[in-house]
Length: 199
View (cartoon, rainbow, N blue to C red):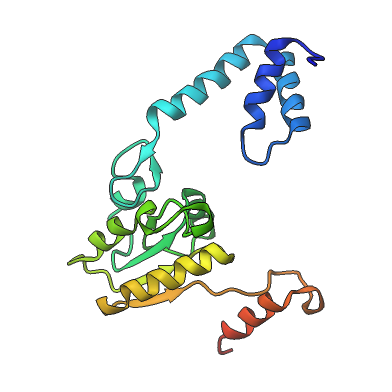
């Protein structure tokens, strides 16, 4: 039963398809759009279309970009001896915000998940291996998410690349800042102990 205008329901259905947006939030967003003035709605619609028309994947690292190659791959000041392998473009954004890593990236486009039918051929692993041949890369940093799929992807890639003779590292896992040991789960505490560093 439609309790609001049909066009509002259709818009709410579209919002509900977005990740992390439930039915209530979708309706709230649709009703907020109704309250916006027409110029704001047109600007929003234009921004959505622009993203689809202009954004593509970098031919080198597979990050999202409007210019190919992307600004990271094009930046001659970046350390070209290290590649940080991540699952998604959002991971590149998160790492760049830290201002700690100055090397290059490679976006796989997901993680291995046999239950979901995602195998090595569904990720940009071949492209990664092509980048490594004769490239001057010395270190591969595996920065997968700390879940079953991320662990499986890390294990698969480390075994695959070990014969290449490169330094293969993974980001440390541990306790978030501001937490207490008593509230940490066993897996997090275990990884924190494994990743300990000298002081």
